Image (cartoon, rainbow, N blue to C red; front, side, top):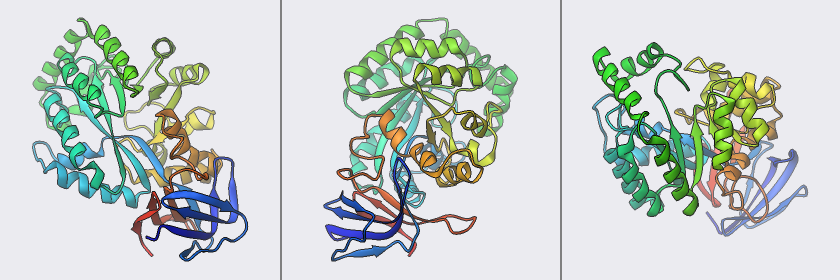
Length: 383
């Protein structure tokens, strides 16, 4: 790709609305000029009236865990899994990905401390070779105090870019009772009823220890090192108030309207899953993302476990009249960028920002990403 080029005849989506038949100039990987008049250059790309979106920023997706271990105890090399997923992400319009890796020793799948830490450090060695801007979201299960030394070392070494804490103990949060917890994790990861009982008893016992102090210590360390912080599966206004006291500005997948309303009132960004929007329901039978956004709640959308749903979710919100298109696009671009502190560089089609953008054909019910650009470099194309 030449250092300078022009995209013309585009329906350009800005944070405030849509510019019809707009042109955009890229120079040295940055957005240099945007105009409603036709621009010209040595290299021109005719968008042919299709949309020009900012690149999607996905702050929570554990698709990498499934890429490495698609079936229980069936592992692929980390580099192969990451490189192959990287290509898929570009095709899905994701230009900045926060790969989510869980620290939850002796639970399910890859969710163990040494494995997660090793994957993070390995990704760091070849991250610069990937097409998509690749960052790490470390998820800390608060009942796993053995994870703390691993996380502390990774945070100090600047290997983590977003940190979240979660509590998947049955009786609160995502799993309101033990049976719901067993029904979800047991079949998915091939655990017997006895194995699930062992996991549950260990989790409940750990919560009686000094988990809260470890949370405080890790939050403090994240703040010292400029790491964004989120909470996961929050289930009450009291929990939201606690997050506010701690200075945590993101809540992921709040499980009921009481929590999501409290977050909205407290100015805490609410992150919802795009699979929930596309499917029309939560896989855990919690609140509907469509209904929440219809009520005016929700700031950020993430792919959770399915990157292919990002594009379809924003267009579903527009099709159903829940959000205007530019508002829905903000939920996968500018809003997540702002929440994790990178909106000065990416997240919207503005002069002076990196040229992370998508040409999207939405002429029928099956939208297609025609081209994906990252820092002005074409990393995916179907035409």
